[in-house]
Length: 78
Image 1: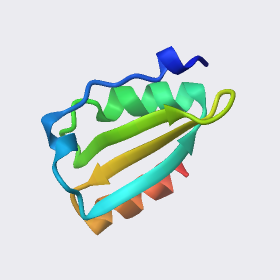
Image 2: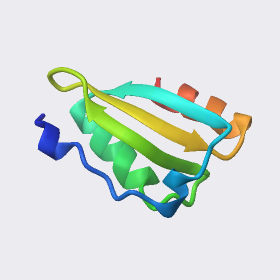
Image 3: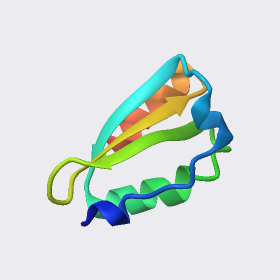
Image 4: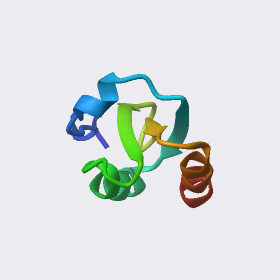
């Protein structure tokens, strides 16, 4: 995966502070699935940042609306 393929539509919510932030390391296919599921930012998760961190390795920061959502995100995507 190339750095140019690691993109997302930044939400206005990504500029606001978040009390609960998940940091996930995803491979390329999982990044595409994650982005397509959470990019609308209506499931309690806002993509704050995503960057390439090696071949087929993307580090994602996601703001969560609550600690419960944070725990669910870590469980589902870890």
